[in-house]
Length: 170
Image 1 (cartoon, rainbow, N blue to C red):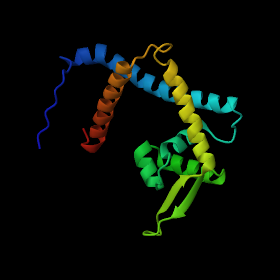
Image 2 (image 1 turned 120 degrees about the vertical axis):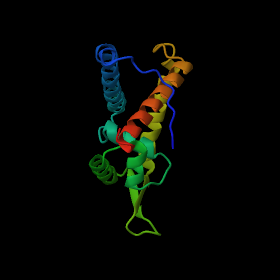
Image 3 (image 1 turned 180 degrees about the vertical axis):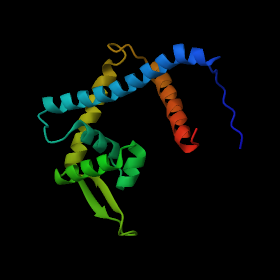
């Protein structure tokens, strides 16, 4: 199988080191900061509502489960969570009454999880937060639909690039 990549590569190593690398590293720092800020926004929202019994990471985990019934492995694969992180947070969410678990009828080794009414309430809170943000992201944030669409396309290409780095050991 031959893969043709339509891209423009910097001309030489000096250009890569002096111009391309600082921009790439800055983008990586922005990605890290944006994820932390998203968690801070969610944490702030929950603190204002007096919801102290759940962390922002756990709330996002619930949001990513949504109306689905999944195994921990499926959740890890979909959300790109670390294994121990998912296990710890699922345990806490089950103890807190946000998630219920049931053994699979076909494979007794497999455990399926789904949200309880409390877990669905957390999802609704995050969805309402996102709806409020959508009302202001263009006027206050200066991000139009096409900006977000282009950003999503670029992040998807970066995700594919990193995935290929792992998959093909590039």
